[in-house]
Length: 216
Length: 282
Image: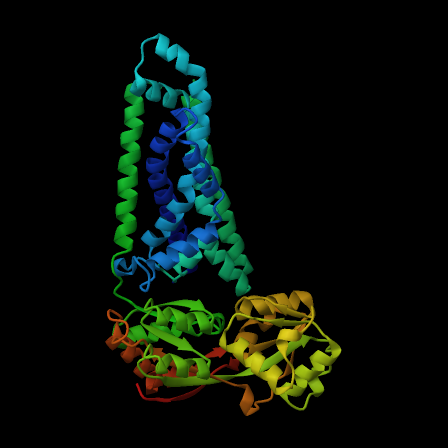
């Protein structure tokens, strides 16, 4: 494979894996985070504590757990998802979901305190309240998604363990930088590092624009 | 943002997630290629990509690999996660066959373990009379030594050499450092930290130009330093679903004339790295 083709493929897979994980995690985390953020403290407290523990879940531990789950000797072995992009996405969803969830929860509960009384005075029901709150919290939720994507694209331990870093199949930017360094291919490693940085810059500036537009 | 545009955002988000998942799932469809677990040393020498290309040209079978330590490579076979393993630790290989995880074993090639270290060689490894003597000199001098400590074939050989010198590596002090990493990474660390280490000569020759502070200090071809590589297809009776026929074809190609002549002709920076010695029961 040519050098450029190889870099293109690695970059594309990095984007696909991190992007898919972030989207799936967003769909799981934003609704749950909104509901939990709106709840009065009490019944949701234990759940919140658990979620905040997962918030600090070391990615490499998530990788280990998903590896044991997906290995053919493991409970989900028959799905044959170890060493595949989908397996990597599963690991990253485990990592990213608590992050988006945690931030969404905080943002929503802050906004809720601010708008709840007004909304009820204006005759809003529970559902309308959540929509109003989520709308007010949109900028914060976008930040949550940005942080989640940042974690996914720069994560290395879990995608290495679960993906296996197979040439042409599951190599991503971060894992390739590791093996490049092991083989003293410093030039190639630096090139990939620059791409990683550029990707982050492009995506963050895009999200920042959306965020600016949605600010109330 | 209004209710309508909010709903639009959600719809766009869901569509994007579904499309992204579909693409990922498509790329994750049950693989048609042969998957091999092999050791970092075969990757770090650069042997694998051209050799696998030749095999694919000859047979139409596509091979991909994960490169890990020998211990982990055999474990991937033991879990049924790969179809074939290519490793270099005969004692562990015998266990792998005995436990019915391996189908059969073809030895394919060997290279030699060498001791490399700081060019100044304060421990006097250059004057050693044998490999255990070389390690004893490093011990006597308490010179810094990098151990891979990763249950790889090289690590297992290193521990056996300490034993042969009458020393117990478990009791060593801080001069004995454990990298827990592959051969290439360990050589880089030894180069930076002016330390001795045990390497296979293939990886050493491939990496030599990037290791200015290290020198080749002990490279005699004592039989104890022979580094024998073998290929073992995973046993389909124990692990149903592995690509057994293709794995056997691969094992046979490696010891056949095409595989053996490729291995013998493979050069890195002008050095022949592997000596083909293909034979076996596959």
